[in-house]
Image (cartoon, rainbow, N blue to C red; front, side, top):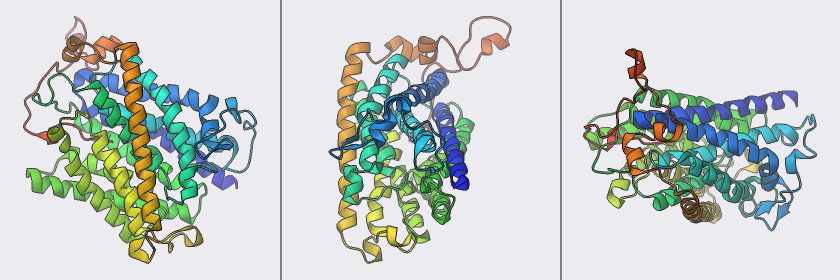
Length: 433
């Protein structure tokens, strides 16, 4: 029991590291005049959602079931009754700590879609409301005792619906309300620091082992299966993305490699303990190819999802969740597993996977639109056009990331770029975590 507790606490720390990793991943993909704001949006989500989770969020997700829709928010209000040294890692403070990190990063993921233009205060207001109205109840649907998706029999080991489809759909809804960045798409918006992007992807991959293998809630063979499948699918997805880039654009890029890594991690999340090696490879390759193709669609439909949260998280989450209906196999987890269509199962699992994915997607997107309109009415939502052009970092935080003027011995801080940079193609603009 002590070993399981130690593993879960270690996993919680790994998942927390994912949010700073996400901050670097996103921060490298924006222009230099926006990087601090992006880092702050991720760190702001850590502070705000962390507090909400401890006060009432855990109870809304894991309290006594209310009609399959949410847990009773008063059961563990302020973690009442849970602040004890319980030896069971599935209960008490250990579970609170582990699941807190999921709530934090799910909310932070949305930030990449609205880079360069959303006021910091407006972001915090949206993040707090969305976590309360969407994430906490959806976590109950998927993982809570009595949640309707759990009762339906849909599979989601570590967060394909609750985390990635949920965040990706919210990103889409919020972007539709906020509108495009000034100058997009005519003006290429080049990532300012690709080494940051690669570093962020590496930190995400490292932390994701806590995300997926930690969701076994034990240091056992199931955690080992989740760990191995996470490696397998992620490697396959990176290769799939790079091949797609090579065939489409003529070059395989570092941005594509980092984005392919994240696409694979996203897609294998719901499936990591329910598939064999062939299933993991299938999910990885399909996710790498489809996400690489999906990120270019925003130019055709005119939706400015700045760092491709929709193209990677929504699409990748759908790939992993739906493909489970085909490639799940009970051979890896025995009695607790189900068989997909390719392994002799019926259509029931596929139906449950599709229904759960569509329901979470529709609910999250709809609420995000409403909350976006509310936040826009209360705070005006966007920074001014002038602030977008000169830099949201200085407008919102009175800081800039790179002090070249100071390095020369005087003057105010200055950002490296303030507007358009010549760049040829989509591949130079961010794709996301």
